[in-house]
Length: 318
View 1 (spheres, rainbow, N blue to C red):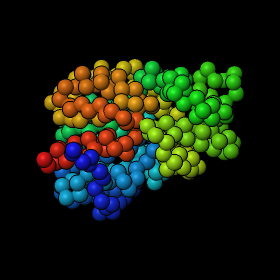
View 2 (view 1 turned 120 degrees about the vertical axis):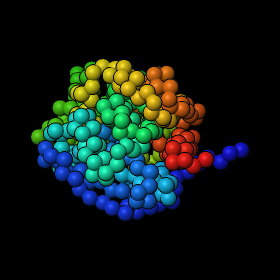
View 3 (view 1 turned 180 degrees about the horizontal axis):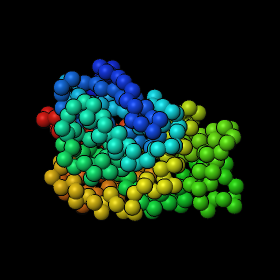
């Protein structure tokens, strides 16, 4: 039996910095691995999730020169939880600024969950700048996907957790949960913001793994994390990501010639597998791995195994 691959050992960045991207935003970035190695950029989820030290460990440090960054308004980027000048297309432009900063012509783009959405938006805008794409937990940000997670669908699988998600919202407003949360997450009252942010964030933290994971619950319940995560994610989703309906799948032809890997859990609750399958059909250059017995998180053993194999393969490792 072939052993499942796991993360590379912990590693510290060899460079960190803040990049002024305009509009009052500065984004935190870090580089790890081997300077001058195979260039890669890691796009975190959320929106609003931020990077973690374990994300560095998805890449062989002897082969990769990987840049990770906190997207606008989250993690160590400033100002915290800010929604001004914070859209998908601002982030696509930020990725290009970072590529120019590290002086590479093209790089491997790795994105999971919302990071897959952003990776597709970036790759379809700048296909000549992408050497390979590694995507996990595909999210194409259609109205149907949003309704499935925030209105009716996942609610049927997790009635206990859905009840807690509904709790801050009066019954009369529950016909539009994203809109009702928007009102509270942008309230002038910090206490109302925090209550809504924690409920929004914990709903996600408790539905992304096949089996319960107390660590995710605790992380998503942290006030500082939850405020940026909930405010920014809700901001993006009530605006449909500033994408035309179905745009990312419609424009998948622009990925022609870009090698890739699509890794998706069969029982991914936030991101239904049908959209990953549709991307697989629209982008045949990518290997497709539908992982049995797995939910959404990159840490699910079968998902992590395929992600590690993909980054190794694209670095020329067999």
